[in-house]
Image 1 (cartoon, helix red, strand yellow):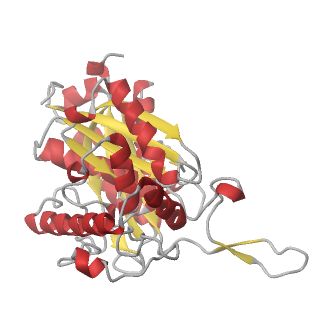
Image 2: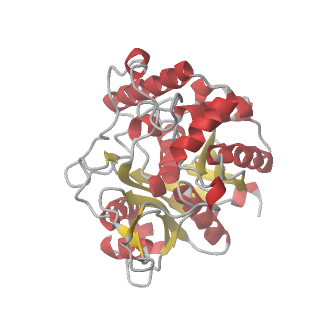
Length: 385
């Protein structure tokens, strides 16, 4: 398959991102997923009848097959199956990668992304041992116990080892909020956001959040550390998805889109999972035959300011290029959906508003994983633009 035949993202949508326990707290995860799937089918018009599969990422839902449930909730025909994937915080981007593989294998159109509701995630417990009480299940193990650190601890250590100061982290986090507020007020999110239960705006971005205000917060995970609640992402509810088609279908429909030039998944030491996006980015760029200097739009999942800055330093990437309309530090981090949010953001910037040709999305995940994708904006005839 040549580059010209590569799968193309022809529609993209996300829900508002709600802070856990706030605006979307009463919306079950399948309804969040159904909202974006319905929007994509509507945007495809008559081609909405050509959807062959649905792939959704999810981390903490009720189990079962969320993708199938959300597809049925969205009113998709019974013959459209569904597949739920779990690569933790990279699940949404991994789902889009898988959709691209399905299209390469002959599927006409696949809807892919992720959905997460931290607010409605079920409470679970480990079975009692020797007649004792059940123990609350907080999360799945990502790695053997001796290297399976909590995310906050692991990324505080990553920032320390990379020499990323508290001052840099707070300044980066404050800038993410300022950028997101400016983008929201300018209407930059309007075309991508689908209202859910009357909610139309992201909860978390805060105006006037300065580095000085963030500097007052205490370390949240490591005594004397640099990671705080203010320079970390928020636990969130939300969903995001895209429609992936073949190049032939994209040109038949006459829709502009994002051609998927390359994808990559990589692993690093599980005790420093935040580094996972670094080798994934390098491999995706190599496979696409481009360098960081060629990329016009960079969207990295901002789990922690120190983690993003450490990765940027290792990649030689100017942090000012990352998430110019705010990232997860400001918008929030709906785990299984966040990787898909990155691609929705690229679609808005490169396709809807024509702000460049090449885009990069990348996310790190628990267990020491990273997923990255390089895309190219194309016009309705499939020509780069």
